[in-house]
Image 1: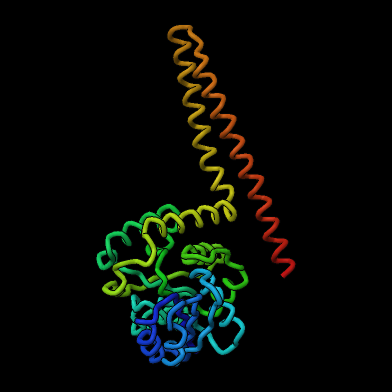
Image 2 (image 1 turned 120 degrees about the vertical axis):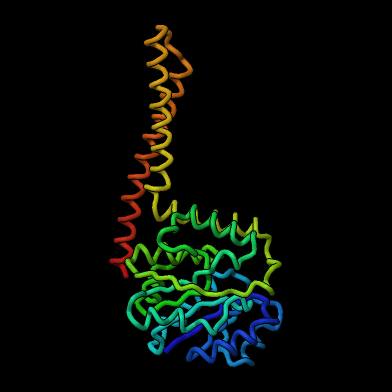
Length: 295
């Protein structure tokens, strides 16, 4: 059976049609009403969806976690489809997403949005987040909220205890899926932005918020990368100043104090950063192993 889960916040104008269209393609529709102040929950329920309501707006990540809790608590479903409630995603394309799950070639399928169909500010934000989170190469649309997971994937992600409660959840799910060895595939989809051209949240504030949440996540999950790469860059900068110091001394016999201080500062800071990255990486691995043992 297939469950379609739709995170929503104040989507009373679109949610009814989204639910009705989704019901034609799946066995059950679940709407997670994330503290809406309008009639989203009532309209979704009238359209035939099961509704879980949060008492306050906790964020898209929290809504997706509620969907994972619901689907993993039941043995009725073997596929979970996630889509937005603002009519951006067309439920008629659900069969395209679940086909790779049905034929066993993927555990998670991402709906790939052609950048040409996206508003300019969304294209810029997507590209920045794809590159800065180092997900590009694993998938080319890390921020797409239209995705499908088989039971292996949603059971594993539920056990991972995803941290993010905001829009960073999409990237966090992909990072976790990659670490878990899940097979990820993309299929092209078409999106409708006619009704969502004006975002409810400032796109710059939204992008910075997602990026900062992901940087924090990377710092916690991959401390060696977070501290090691800057540490290596600082060490190289220190060696560069050290080389300049030696060249100047060989040419003129002048021993530059500024070059000496710069070389020493960057090398010490760089080596310390690499060392701390190694230590924190070991600690992170030990904590993960301990957590799995306790589970």
